[in-house]
Length: 163
Image (cartoon, rainbow, N blue to C red; front, side, top):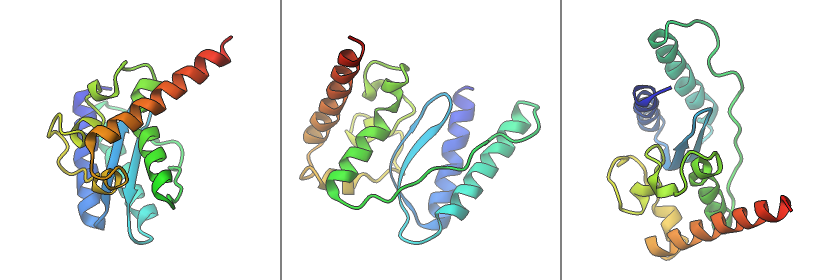
């Protein structure tokens, strides 16, 4: 609903990352959902996501004087197997706010880790995108070019589909 809710979710994410020794490679919050790119290293994803969603739901319900189920569906997940797949999933995650029409430029969306990865902010120091950057030889400029190219490809295909 607002910045307090968004920061509350982030604080709870950091607790879960620490508790389960996960690495957050990227995230993007939009108005209706969140995208996460995580490295878990074990089978703890279901338990960790349950804890994250439960803790955040309790906070949200208490803060907004509401009751009942907040997270209505189970999270979706899939395994990333290759470096090129990692880059593709990374771009998908960080481009979500642009795709949702919340911002024209991904680096301007406050609730996404992209700006931190590019070194434009240090807001989300818990994010470790070194594996993602490793796929572009450690170059933030190459990562930006890759994400920009994905965005342009989506815009082009959307424009063509509307004709």
